[in-house]
Structure formats: C-alpha cells, structure tokens
View 1 (cartoon, rainbow, N blue to C red):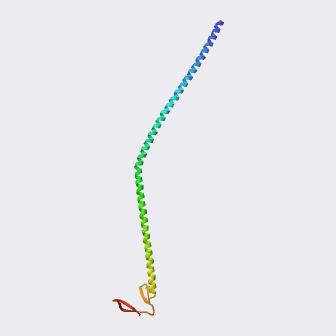
View 2: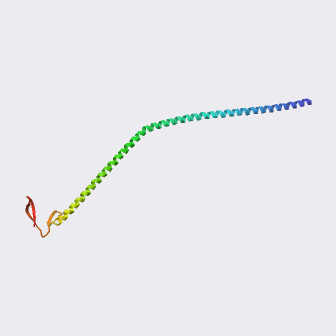
View 3: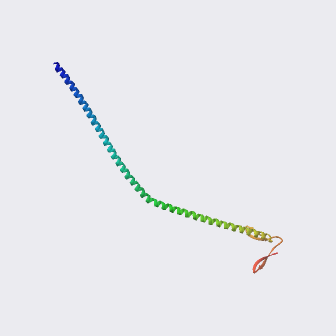
Length: 171
C-alpha cells in the first residue's frame, strides 16, 4: 500500500509540476499576446496620428493657397486704386502748394511795388510841401471845406483871368 501512497504522492507531484508548467506556459503566452496587442495598438495609433497629421497638413496647404490667392486678388483690386488715389491727392496738393506759392510771390511783389510807389508819393508830397511852404499861401482844412489862405501881408483879388481861366491875383 505504501506503493500506492508513493505512487499517489508521485502522481500528485507530477500533476503539480504539470500544472505549474502549464501555468508558466499560459503566462508566457499571455505575455506574448499582451506584447503583440500592445505593439498592434502602438502601430494603429501611430498610423492614425500619421493620417491625421497628413490631413491637417493638406488642409493647411489648401488654406495657405486660398489666403494667398485672396490676398493677391485684394492687392490687385485695391493696390492700383489706392495708388491712383494717392497720386491724385499728391498732384492736387502739389498744384495747390505751387499755386499758393505763386499767389504769395505775386502778392509779395505787388506789396513791394506798392511800398515803392508809396515812398515815391511820400517824397513827392514832402517836396511839394517844402515848395508850397515858400509860397505866400497856406492850405487849410475845415469842417466846411478846404481853403487857400494868403499869408499876411498878401491878399487875393478876384475877377481876374489867366490864360482865359478865372483866377485870383495875389497882392
């Protein structure tokens, strides 16, 4: 019976050894499957990210082309219009500036001519006043008119003519 007990104990040890071996094999296979699944997920994720990145880059390229095209269109549409407006404005400002300069120059020359004429008239007036001062007559202004008055001892006699014109004789 002892043989049976040894055999059962040996059988139990073999079964335990066999279970342990199978457990290790199952664990090894599970690890391999987990590694394969992990690699497959990593690969799938990488592919999905690559596809998303490619789609984003394609959309960015399309967006960049669209913006460039619209920018060129706006530049063509408004560039010449703005440039023409700017040139017209500069032409008007230049014309107004040159016209103003010309008018100021003309006004300055006219003012100089008038100043010269005033000086000449002032000189003539002063000369006439000096000349008249030696005459025996004075000019007087009054509220009721202007009068020529002889200086004493001179007098004026009317009913005379000079070159067929009425005149006063100074005595």
